[in-house]
Image (tube, rainbow, N blue to C red; front, side):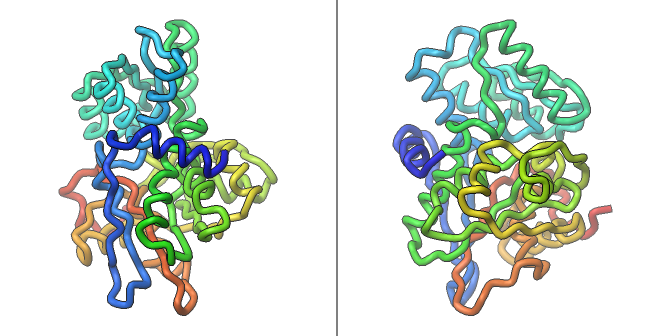
Length: 311
């Protein structure tokens, strides 16, 4: 995947998604927050969902069977919303662990929701079987060029709004957002890739020389709990290695609380992982370094925003 894919996605989805703010979060302008939680559906995945479906419509591949997707919640939410807006049918497979707040919203957008398995990998196998049997077009949650390129459009916005940004910090699960941001930023800004210690797909892939299955758990597993890094994300690693950072569950919770207490930015745990790299000191910018942190989702129970413990 290249920046050209990301730029094509930006043209395709223009007018369908929100251009979210790049908000100045420090007095010296060294830190900005990309407020992608203000996107339709409260998550960056809406960009990739529209790009995948619009590309499918353009190619004539989407029939009355519509699209099928497996998701821990956010990708399904975005695909359901895009399908409703485009008048398409959507069938979303979620694991039993998917948060009810996300499942309810997926159904509210008119998609058929099917709970299958205890984690994403099982839901994904069910979505593939369904697509083969029904004729629905498969929309991958993260490892698909159209999906990842759509996600990367937020990096295009960051670097258009503030070309002096040196570093973009993103959370990594399956790696679709990372792959898209890396493709957009290649040669223009470094990427810091942040994972929970209990969902280390990128770290394990870098150690093994390729994507491998890992066990996943923890506070951010509902959105960052893919068991395996996507091939597109690993290709991005090979093109230009990111700065990899691991954070603990307690550090994620603390960062989520800080985003709310200090900035009144509501974040789900997976989205707070990126800010946790800075807040915990796991990533320390150099003097004069200008950093943008992507707050990529806000589909969470607002009553828990002040929670200060992962336990």
